[in-house]
Image 1: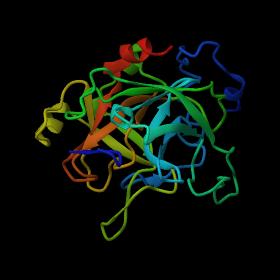
Image 2: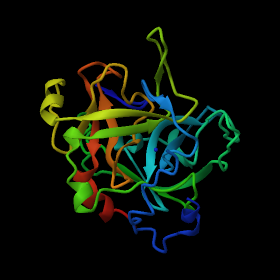
Image 3: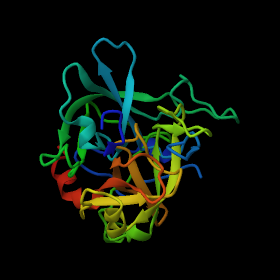
Length: 291
């Protein structure tokens, strides 16, 4: 079993804020894709998937930041991620900040080939972390967590939340026959088949949903209803470093998060889907833990 981290993704929005940190944004103020490689993926536009977050780790003895997991902004105060990214950390290895609005990890000012530039990324300190109380590190069931940011985030063209599938039409989407998108800065592949840890640029890859029955047949472990599978196409997958990031799909033009990157056997293996935490199974848990 390989987890997807080294240890196991409108000007109008800039004018909007929410008075209560526990309130989730309504569709229309979330899930907006204002622009039209994860393993086998492609570089995104600089303003794509503005909810994509990077967890910034600090380790005693290291001066540089470590980027080992991702997440998704779901409100002006909370980021949704995987519990295996947050559970059991020590004082010597901890999540220190969450970075939003990032595209190019190696550039202070992100600009594309047309000299269109983003706002500077925003690093927000962590106030608290809530891992699911029934998370099992051995089976990676209930692999979901919330990070509460130390202060509210102002929404811009480059930072805005993804929607959660609360409404009936979004919640009842047939995930077995949906084309999803995964976003992150995880491992990428070279033409010779070797891996490189961590992409410089934000990447996205399109992955088809896979039934639980098909997914279960590919794994020794039991795949259960609160998990979701996607991928199984050679050379396309989430990979190490993408853990906690979102698996999203559009409904009526807005993007909703359906999966949290959790684990899998390797990356981009034909016939072997990636395993995700199914967000619709944890909607009550998420809402009950927003304070």
